[in-house]
Image (cartoon, rainbow, N blue to C red):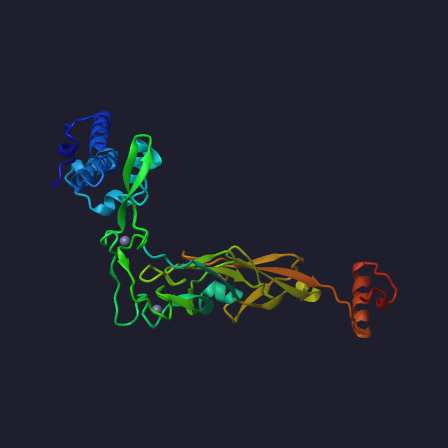
Length: 362
Ligand SMILES: [Zn+2]
Ligand SMILES: [Zn+2]
């Protein structure tokens, strides 16, 4: 097992400052810019940097002290890793595409954003929905490889497949060498010598993509669903982009949604409000629920029917259905009905106008 303390030449109980000083001295000695073309120094520099990466990070240091080992990914893929260390010690001059940075390689595909308009019920209870969009799709002639069928990519001669080359750089101290991404192969280490004629070696062409979106229950306007790697095809073997589905819920004639609750307005005649009535309240899932409105119900009374609202997104439970009662004032009485109402007014002492009803007609 690697002993990072030994690599830096410090004791196991060395302080952070001592570790830093040791790294600084060793890095200066072994830095590739100071040893152009010296692969042994490059390897030593790598080890020194790795040791420092671990021992300068209290969490990693603790893990190392417990006997854990680190893989490459663990070490240098993390934000704030080797690149930051180099930046800190040597400024920004270190060659781009140096150690630790991921190879640029073929381009990842594009992210796509699509809007999906849903009925309220579909948004509430979930649904499957087809979406389609024009983007880049894998080239079927070369299966996305970019090489003409029967051919494969060849190793890049300029970088010998490493994807990196040394480049001379003028500095105050004279000419320095640094490691940069190979310009011939863009860091992939491979060249396509027989490009697929269908896609020009891209491995992807323009086309239409159709997807089935599995909409979970409880989505609302503004909900964004992400479909990993279902977007534009990547260049050759690179991963596809993602698809973001932006949900928009269409207005509904019967229900107004507020969060997970639904609001429904129902109109009753004033005799129904006066004597009570059984109302059939429509439910979002279809079907009805019977609501007993008691005698003497006033306008704008609100009844709450539990758990008949919208299912909660990614949680258990449902919102409620709130029923708002409107009391309907008649505007179109026939003579008999008018007579009955006027006798009612005589009995209660109300004093309605005797003008013709027609005056109030809309
Ligand atoms: Zn092709
Ligand atoms: Zn190359």
